[in-house]
Length: 186
Image (tube, rainbow, N blue to C red; front, side, top):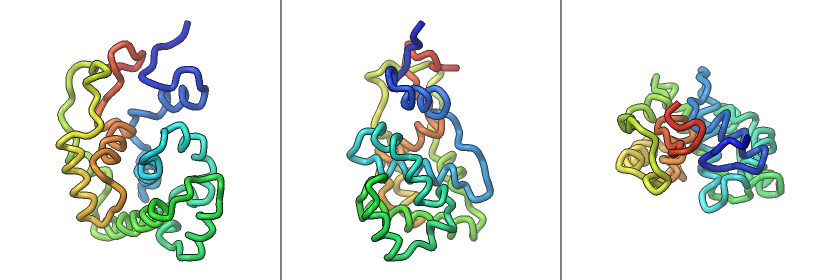
């Protein structure tokens, strides 16, 4: 029997992402690398299909040192040039530079005792109480617009309201598993 999904049915990689990761909180770690990875990859996805980024994720993890913020923050122009020449990732200078800048912003937050998870949680809307219909799933919300503004004030880049909302979906801050999905309102 085929499970009904919001997206991804028919591609094993996409199915696994939907079933095991999307909508689940990022594992907590002192450096918040998993959360950093998710926000970075959502930025790389901007203008592309998510499956494109998902298929490139192993290489992204390799070249961005598993998204360890301190390692990424230390990247310089030679690293940017190396990344621009790597066909295994999305080769976009602005997105690469934003990822490095975001790592620096995250380190600055941590030095002040702030956590990215707390910033996202502060902008999380109350639960709907029911699974949404497909046409009720937004691409951005007032909360994601406010999250975007907050992240930009903290020094983050490439985190517009749509990217902020996609991050909120990815980490389960909002539950957008739609009616009929086997994970809806689990």
